[in-house]
Image 1: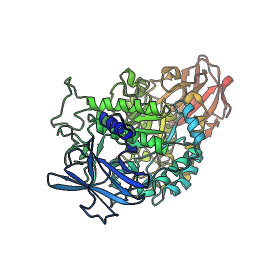
Image 2 (image 1 turned 45 degrees about the horizontal axis):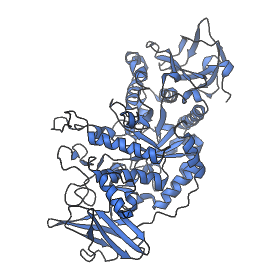
Image 3 (image 1 turned 135 degrees about the vertical axis):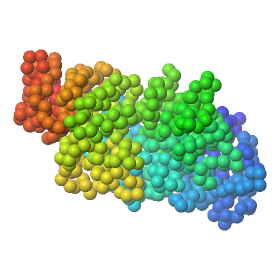
Image 4 (image 1 turned 90 degrees about the vertical axis):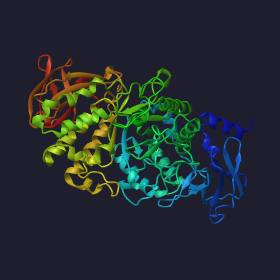
Length: 611
């Protein structure tokens, strides 16, 4: 069997993870070959710069496997093109689903692009990733490239973002989707070109350069990726060959009625090859360290967003989408077999079991899942005046009942600061002074709570207004007194977290967590300890009331404790507890006086970590 024959065979089997090596536009010798899958098309013509966009002068030939092909002389790098697809007397101009580059909106032609030849300098990072990626602590900075600082190119973003991330102490950056997309207001979540990075900020090699520079600076790169749905734009994937092709032909499975987008047909083997190849492509060609898979919940349930509407049922009468479940298992298995240190993260908001359990054990196989329940609860809690928080004390503690049921990331994401939800700053109750104090205590609580950490841009300095993709983040606030102080605090907290293994080593089981005081709802105070694999401890104490809590006591086994960090004064300041750097228990308990809306980290004195 010829190599190309095998590629086509595996594509139709749903197991070609490198379909992008064959379909799309490629240089073969001194020629450029175009191939597109369109089984129901009657005729296809290549229209492009070369033939001045003539509709009929470059007919394509249908080959075995429903692949249409044309070979042109020359290496036509930079040439813009589309496919004119005829079906039942109707024609449509379609962009290439496998194109490596695209025009910038509002234009939408595909562009012939050689993405090979980039010289990577991240060997040291890639070796580190093999050994540490799934063991190391993670502090993820989520960013929308179009609105961090508007008007910057990939290269200019690197010039400013990398020093900022190094200074603030984040370990990873997560980009909102970078696949080419027609609508700015979709933030990239309604993409059409699954192999083409958006040209809004530059060429493919310039994105590679940005990722390479991040890696050489010791910063990992995660990418939001959307295998759930796609928009209905005429030049895109919808009814690609005049029939439902990438989407299902079943009207009950065809679209999300709220979003107005098509679901992918995960049961179709060729669609699986397309999506799997896209995921592999970003790992292979762009050295991305992981994918955060968007809208997983919408994939898992046949009746998602169909309240009051008819919905389909699976073969067993349930509402689970068995095709999507099988695809997600295949996705995670494939990526982890090809790239063992690659990370996959699920945005999934229900209690669907086993999201991070191995696919071989019946799970979906993700490495992490966003803990959206934790985010909803803590923001509801902190939005209440401290006088009334006691009545909803469970919102502060409930997440620990399920924190080890999955491997979680705690997300303070873009979803929490838009669509009328308000900024993180405005979720905090009280006046400005109270908001700053509550934010400091909240961040400390977040970092003490089991789970990796994610902050959306602007949260680290307390942006006041809700995020709007049309304008830059208010980075000027980072130079104003209170906000500058908060940014320094978060930077200090980041470094404190990274240097204290008890806060992150045992994030996935009860060996790393022990309650010391959980039910003191009248004081709005809690205490627990985090424990490293070596048995090192960090005691984490929080007062979310609006007044000083004197004599907050809880039983401890050690006799003396050293103050490591307070939310009021940063690393190793003891003013929060009467100026004492060392505190001792009284009887069987440790008794502390806690300022309003404050956090305190301590460790047993004999094994306190030097910082």
